[in-house]
Image (cartoon, rainbow, N blue to C red; front, side, top):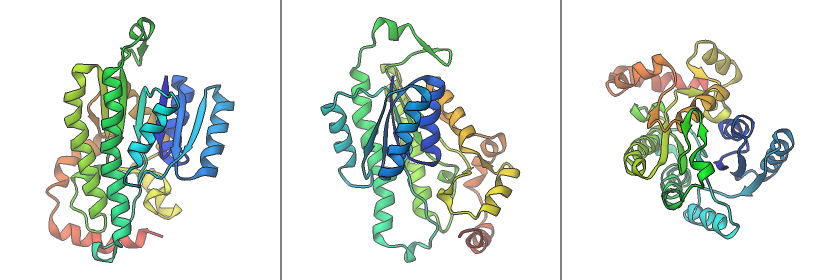
Length: 275
């Protein structure tokens, strides 16, 4: 089994790569725009878990990034069994103070690249024929499918939140897009799962170390290793979508009805938690 993980050099992506190698004995194609860190991760995972690893430097925010990555895989004979669309960015900023370059970067990375990578690799998976051995094998107690795709959304997909207006809009796209594709791929024995966690304890959100510790202690934030363990199980069981945490799951319908006064208060308070 060969898994392609984007944004694999740190944070959640590193956890996906680690757990796929450690718990599922998957070979890895690791993609990131951090060359040095990516090479180190690939080397360490290969030595630690005895899997084959390939480090591929790529800027997935470029308009033709998905096409180039897919073509590169074809040229090098890499057949992708698992696609983890994890690469992402986050910034908290008033929209009119945000440069067009940063807005374009987020839209390209979260919308265009995710949609195109899903399209290109899903087509390959749909056409694939499993060997008898593969067809009779089981992962997480379920028969192996022709392929698996996991896309990362967020609870913010349900929020109209000032400061993260572009982020939550792109995550809403990923969530609805992935759930819709699930129905199309299921008859072809290809799975797609979208995860919509609340806060995750990484540096992505720019919280200070103090507030990161408080968020984890209050279970508002989830450690990436716990999120990834759950996400991979959901993916290999072909679950359509998942929001970790009972309180998070329970509160998601309420997020669309957050009163305006609360959002204005959040707008004033959130900035102080950022670096």
